[in-house]
Image (cartoon, rainbow, N blue to C red):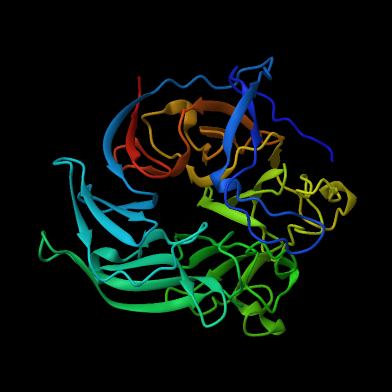
Length: 398
C-alpha cells in the first residue's frame, strides 16, 4: 500500500490506533471487519509538517449533554433538533438550555453502528414543516437503513411530535450485521435529496447496480429517483444512483460552488475525501489506499486509472464522521474550506479543497471523538461529541 501522508497541517501529533470494539463476522477471507467507529487511540507518534497553512484560533464552550447523539439540524429560531442513536429526537433550546423529546419517532434497530441517524429539514420547511430522518431498521431478514419524512408539529411547545411519518427510501437488500449504514442526507439548492449509503461491510454490493449499498443517491423529495441520474436504463434500483464504489461515506456536503463532496472511512488505512462526479465509480472494494484488516493488500487507486481516485487520503486514519463546508465569516481562515469531524482521531480536520492538490491545512485537537458539525446562522459552529454523556459544544472565534 502506498501511504499518503497529508501535508500542510498544524504541528500536531498524528495518532496510530488499535482497532478494537464490536467486530462483525468475516465476509470473506480477504478482510476481517473492525468497527472503527468505536476505535480508541492508544499511542502517539509525532509527525510534524514543515509548513503550516492555517492558524485559525477558536474557543469552545460546553452547552449541553446528550446520550449517543448522531446528528443535528437548526430551526430558524435557533433551536436544534438532535438525534440520539437509541431512537430519541430531542428539541433543544440553546437560550434556555432546555430539551424536550419529540414524540412519534419510528422504532429503530439500535446496536452496532445502528440506530437513529441523520436529520434534515425540507427546503420549504417553513411552509410544509417536513423533516427527514434516517435510521437503522430490522427486516424479516437482516437490517438496513431507512429514510422517512414526517411533519414536525411544534404547536405545543412542551409536547412536540412527528406526524404522518412515512418511509420514502430504504437500503436494498437488507443484510446481516449492523455496520456501515452511513445514511447521511443533504438537500441541494435544486430541492433534490442526496443520501450516502454504506456497503454494509459486504464489499461487493458497492459495485452492483442492482443494490443501492455503497452508493451516493440522488432522489426527489418524495424518495423517487431524480431525473437525470446516470444509470436509469439499468433498472429500478440503478435509477437512484449518482455514483458507486463507496465504502462507508459518513459525511456529505456541498461547497460554495455547489459541488458535492463525500468523506468516507477506508478499510485499514486510506480514509478518503472525494469530489462526487455524476456516474463515476470510486472503486471500492476493487481499489483502495488502505488494506484489508487481515493484512492482505488492496490495489491502490493508481493501478486502475478508470476508477475515480480520492482527492486526498489519510493513513494514519482520521475515522471521519461528518462533513461541512464553512461559509460564514466568524472564522475567516476557514471560509469555503471543508471541516471534517474525526472519531478515533478526536479532531476536527480542516481541508482546503481549492488547493492543487487538495490538502489538510489545520487539525483541531478536540480530545474527544467528534460525531457531527453544524454551522449556525451567525457563523459559529455547533459540535457534537460522540458516545454516552457527549457534549454539545459551541465553537466561537478566540
